[in-house]
Image (cartoon, rainbow, N blue to C red; front, side):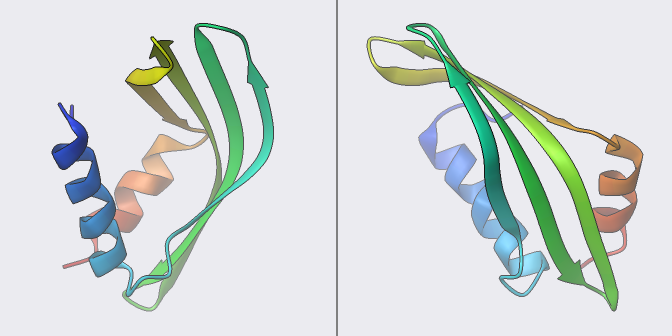
Length: 88
């Protein structure tokens, strides 16, 4: 879990560092209402001589026009874990 903007930005910075800034989150579809935004995206990254590619679903909960919670769901969480486990 990551609590607060600084923690989330630190996560993104760490992923960028681990992948030599090859991590890409490419939104393909989005659905929104006044309380939630759901994004389906293609995620790719390279590192350690390997390539990672998967589809992710990210759900954002909004309050007062700001994101207050987010849930990130890779289609194949085991592949994501294996990829990052092998990186420095």
